[in-house]
Length: 210
Image (tube, rainbow, N blue to C red; front, top):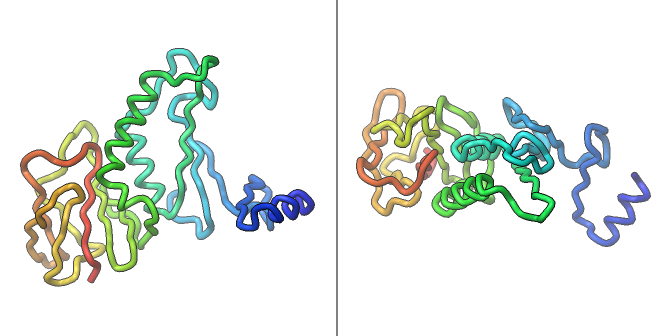
């Protein structure tokens, strides 16, 4: 490894090496497989997970629902991790229609909410019930996960762990107007839009942190 690492880094000095499960100088990123840690690992990490049941192509395979994949992505990013999502191509180099449908759904969600994912950082307490938090500087993103079998969030979301700056607006990504809020003893309640929502599966509230 020292010889290979030195050779590779002469060509690409910023190279990250994953000498998996070995530890030491050449395991620069941890790679838990098919699982998500309960908390941030304090070290760069990436969950390696299959969309289907196998790393390889399986005819007629069952693929995870888009909702589950998006929730997994959000949970990982809220803990400062990265998601490596595997899809095995067929011998003809094609992907199953179900896999492509999942990718389109993820792409649709990211088109609205990518701001809360790309380039964001974890912020304690990371998780609060069905909410996951990410941040960019003083900006906090509270990502509200859809409950099982639900296509809408509750009419109100309680923000208690992380609170908006007094007088600062709270926005839902994909919605132009700020959302109505009211102070509570525990923090703040945000009233969500009652009509058409900008995405499915999870909704992002953006605010400046108090």
